[in-house]
Image 1 (tube, rainbow, N blue to C red):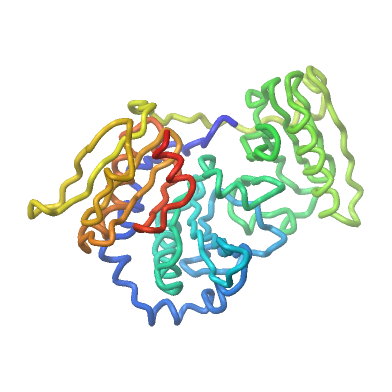
Image 2: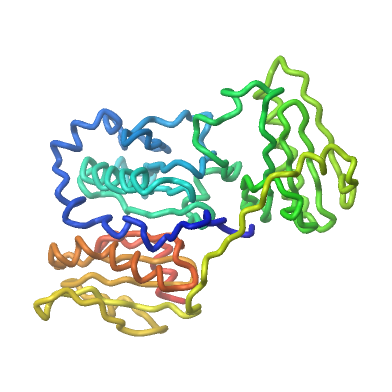
Length: 370
């Protein structure tokens, strides 16, 4: 897929995610976490739970909508699992997901509430930051049918609009195997590329356009998507049509005529690309909090010292490792340092995972072996 389309006049560097894990967030008390109705019963059984932030409140997301995310919203996702099937012990991965059009207040609340849920679960979860279009492999694995990225907020769904008044929506299908991602893009003909598949949803009519170089995975995913759209509009006379290659490019074809929306360009300026893993240390041993580069490449477990916080940056992920002996100041500012550092790189929106010493997962161990 082409990646995240950043809205005009918006700078991710202004993101208040730098406050995630700060003294403000860490001041959340267990009693406050217990008083949040949304957390009651969470993490008790194996499975996935998703909440959406609505006007600063945590609301349960419909299970039928799992895998669908609106770019104007922010979400909290908790995956509860058993590391050892023979044991009753539970483990957790806790994510907050940020849509590209989500307001700072919304994703700031999602970050804050993620810390609160972590507190509710006795600091047991591994915490993750996910950004639209840059989701981690782990996050994607929760949704066997793939992820669908929708424009707008959840309240703008089809069930709120009459089909005959429906605003055209264009969906881009890109990837292979189970990794096909569905992203809503501006309904502009410049978005069509021969290597992928697109579905144009006009409400009562749905077109599937297969580029000449599209994969069978993309075509099959689009067919399933169109089928689900029709099922969701029971009682309506829905017409579908599949277009191949150059078909549909005629100026008089309804498919082409419907592609009129103004395109939105990604004006993000990329920074320096680093292909080798890098290790940074967050330490206040000198009397002031310092962020120092330790080494590039050849990073081993022995490079991580229990009295500090370390940030491991790879080309695709960023890990914040919190030593058992790290000071409160080091722990509280580690996510902020990781966030600020990534803002200076070519891929600032890559996933961030916060791992406490002894909590290292397979992805982290694999990154060390790279």
